[in-house]
Each structure stands twice: as structure tokens, then as C-alpha cells.
Length: 92
Image 1 (cartoon, rainbow, N blue to C red):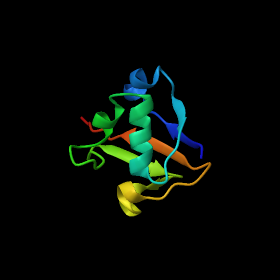
Image 2 (cartoon, helix red, strand yellow):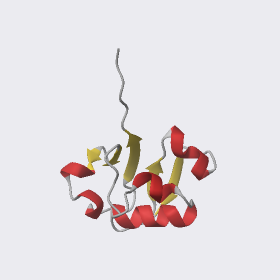
Image 3 (cartoon, rainbow, N blue to C red):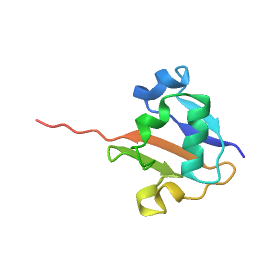
């Protein structure tokens, strides 16, 4: 099962400077575990100690925020696209 994962610029140093990688998983949690196997250190950037997505990390499956789906248990299928987007704060 090939799932395209879009990696934000701040994390690309962990993926050998790749903006997109392919991985596998039946759900988001398994996908993150598989990403960690291929790219050590990425899971700690994405997840807290309990294995939940950090509050400042937004994860989308086919443009749907997993917070409005089943969070880390959101099911994945072949050809899904997952985007990892760090929250951006700022202003004047």
C-alpha cells in the first residue's frame, strides 16, 4: 500500500531533503511508526509521549484534518495523500 506523505520544510532534514516520501500504514498511527522506521527522529517531532499528534502539528488525509476524523486511528488506503503541516503563529 503506497501512501504519499508531504513533508514540511523544517522536517525535510530527517527525510534526506525529500518534500514527499512514500510509506505504508492501515491508519495514521501505523503510518507514523513506519515513517519512524525509515526516518529515525521524525516521530518525536510529530507525536507526544502518548503517541498522539502534537498540538502544533496538523495532519491531513486527502485534505481532511484528522482532528475531525478519527485522529491517529484515521484509516488509510492505497493512493491516499497525507500532508503534515506545522502550525504557524505570528502577527504584528
